[in-house]
Amino acid sequence: MIPTTPLLPVRLLADTGREPVLPGTAVLRMETTPRRTGTFDGAWWPRSRDLGSQLSGLLAVLSARLGPLARVGLDAGAWDERPGQLIVDGRTVRIDWSAVSDDTMIVTRGDQDHFMFLVIPPQTAPSLARAAMAMAVRDDNDASAERILAATGVTPADRTPVLPGTAGW
Image (cartoon, rainbow, N blue to C red; front, top):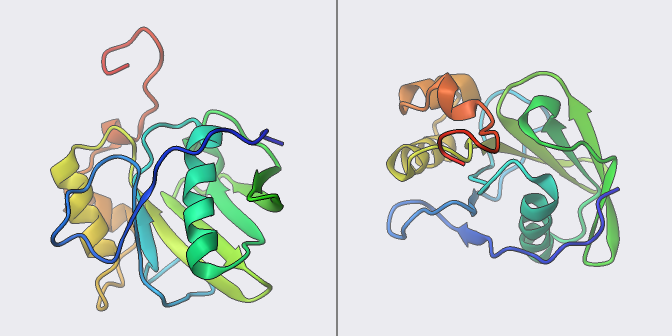
């Protein structure tokens, strides 16, 4: 379990058309999907791969908008640590890990409401992040995360963790 950490500001945008998109931005649509393929309900661009500092802020903002959250499904290879739960606003949110490497996150509210997010790699350039987020939340989008990232110019190098002492750190 990750202890409660100070929340970094998360900007929750209705769309990506008018406001600047910076690391830490999340975009949310109010539609749900029950699986990890197809239409995205939102997109999130974390500032780093440090789950404790990144996910707490996002879940606090989403809880204020959606109500209490029960669990989050994440890609095991995309984060520096893999706790089983996180405390958000005094409530325990379970974290489920998978090794699917599909650049997605599923947020569950209650037993049936699933919100699927495209997760933009932290190293992505702002213009590419904006394009990927906008494509993910389009009403007519049925592209996978892999196809969205490729179509908007996000490369596999953007998905590689930046290690201390290397360029970009």
